[in-house]
Image (cartoon, rainbow, N blue to C red; front, top):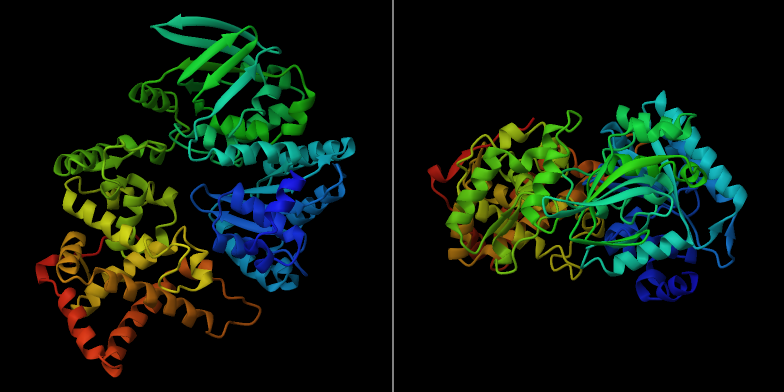
Length: 586
């Protein structure tokens, strides 16, 4: 892997943006394994003088996860315990964020501000050491001790964290899987040599039931990156809840031989499976019940590798039918620990919107389940995803794009507000989707609007502010400060007047101007401006609105600007009944 990565980081992107091979290695990992784009990667890197042993910080809002990365790019074969101690030191330091921020470099200071906000929202923290080497025996022992210590501290501390080592072998596995990411079906050969198992056919379905050793569990691909759980109704909830703490306590304690009896087991589906002696070949593997358990078991990997008396019940079903697989996923996750937001895909209001939308638009498709794929014969511009749709509702109808990044809150706290009307018109479903499609056409590497690089690094949530700015263009030009335009009506008039691209452009430029104005404001003593925190606060909304008003007021002062303003005014002119009051979300 060292030679492969060494060759790949010689490209202009890595050489021009990062000053040494250590930074380039971490950037390579972010780009190729975590799929961060170029701007996000550059923003995530904190390595340099004053980095306090933290090379990168990644805030993953979709999965409520904080990754704190330390990289060791070495040609020699082994890594001792020192890099692990550096990772541990970063854990100790972020326990006192105020002190750390005072002594950190500028980039780290800004990322720590974002990190603090994420911790306040109970994001899971994952410390990751990535290396092209292999841990020495003493380093493996230290890793095990650190994992046990973190588990114990998590029992009595609000701050819960896990530590993982991505060594040369794991790096290779993740890279090979990433290459095949366009076809995310997991194929895996599972050794049952250490396990007790039996094969049956029930209701015409091949079934393998196994008492699988925990050592084999941690070898399953796609646990940490979530790809193993595509058909699950939820992803990892982190290690801080009571059930997962109990699992860790059993593994690291003196009762791990009883783990099999304490645990309800794991349910895994596959499109096809073949049993040859003690090898089970699984094609299209997905775990639909056991995401929390497998992530927790992985967090105790070094302990697990050394034990041979700990097993877990795993049921493998050959289920190629999607509808049957979806029912199994839902029914096996219906225990009381599952929160309501995990099952929103089957809420009657969501299904009503899906039905009316697909009846209205035969070429359209409304995706409600995580991991679901629209049929190939559908028009991709008319394919709507439930998660994106809900985020669009928050940005447009609630006028709170600063909340659009938080999927957990949307499907829990704000769900009743957003989906109170099961008769939400299919025209508006499509209108919102088409507006967002137009927005995303400008959030591409070519950067046609010349957006600030810092803004581009926030592609996970800033486009919802862009969508909000479009709605505000209509509200401001029609003097409707308290009301929101109906999405389909706004889209129709913009298309009819051939001013769609111009409106999207003005909204994007206004967002960009608002960010730059906020960045130039004087900050209080010992405070660093954080673009990520700014865009997640309501403060940004006034800045965007002000930038839109300034843009329109400045048009008459430039050559031909008066004509452009008239065209824009005509292209955004709606009737009074084409507006409605915003939906309250705070």
